[in-house]
Length: 266
Length: 289
Image (cartoon, rainbow over all chains, first blue to last red; front, top):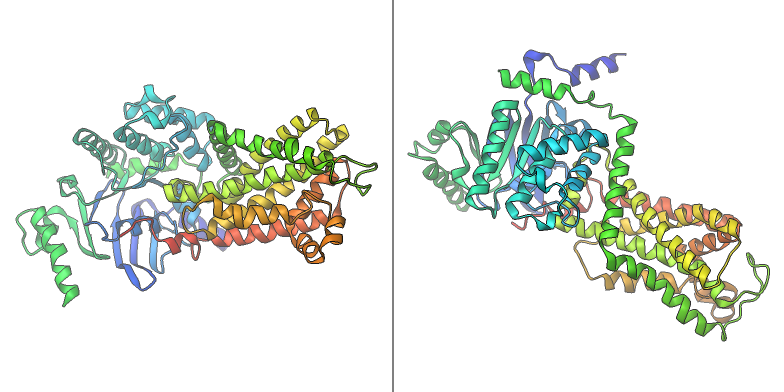
């Protein structure tokens, strides 16, 4: 009985204490002797557009691997809407949508088949999945390409399809790992605009990893990751303050990632 | 604020968390099987070579050998059989062996190319996802085996009609065992390697040190150590299970060994993909830096 009650309590928290979409505390991971992440903390609320900013090799991909439970972290905790990922991965993953750095579409299959496969993995009924696939493709302007093989699409179009697939199951938290790599300016701004609109209009929580400073928008929250540590996090002005009063983000980013290098050599 | 409320409304549309209905498990299985089947159909070359391989053995090798190797009366056969007839169950099992290794290769490929990450972000438990992958591969393999048996019928290898029905569970069980071995290998192989490695170190030894091409009593006359090796080879038991089933008979020892091997390989494969210690963690995030 009590077990049943606590379980319901854990799943449906009181409305005034909505849990963060993603809460990471004290997260550490190492490959052999080489630490990849050290004592990472971050928190994303519903509706937040959070940019995870870091140079290549900062640990962004490791963080994504841990949050999507590709493998378990060696230390710390990850909670998705209050659910501990390691303890109840099913509950946490059910509310998660992911766009990986590498393309993960099946090039031989059609756009629609790729979306339906993703939906089936989440246990969605086929009729509903078809309906949702049509909706999401419409939203990204790819409805006419539904029957085409993914192989025939451009890089930008593939990215759009991957976002459509990630959104098909109506996730409340969307993770994107360098989603604009290799795309032209038009595709980049389309993706960024689409995802930001989802945050604004649908309360989607987003973690957008990138090494490109110009993808940080005015209202974005920023987490600067470097050499496996969070160097600064907060709103844009807060980041500038944390970097010792930098005039702009470019300068702040340079200082935050430079400082660490000196620190680590000292 | 309203964004938060709307978000909660959106998430409320999902079924209650923690209670993914039984249907969800089946839909997941359906999706994985469907993808595997579509991929197989798209790869015409793979389909053709899966069919041509056993046919070469049947049409060329066995025809040449029939004059050298007479097979005397031994169960499940009730009369003298031609070598072609003897070799067909072993070749059907070979189809399953290749399919099992092929799906292990595609697991490694999926891991390298990243599409496995999509599979593993499913909210369903990982052992179930692996089971679905396994079942999907087996269904494709069993289908190939039936197509081969159909062609063998035209080559005048004609087991009793009931055999085509009774062989189904044997093909399934043998396919599961060989597929589980493939999964286990895919968890151990670190990167996409040449298929020749698996060919040399798994397929050839398993195939030749088995009862697929020659009856074991004959092997025993020739070389006792080879006979022991064949007996210890789970593929031998897969072949015998299929052979007896094709003639409407049941071989309990073969069935038991195949089942045991299935549980062993399957269990080790699930461990290999365990998020806490498996191949994923060893390989890192897939990022070079």
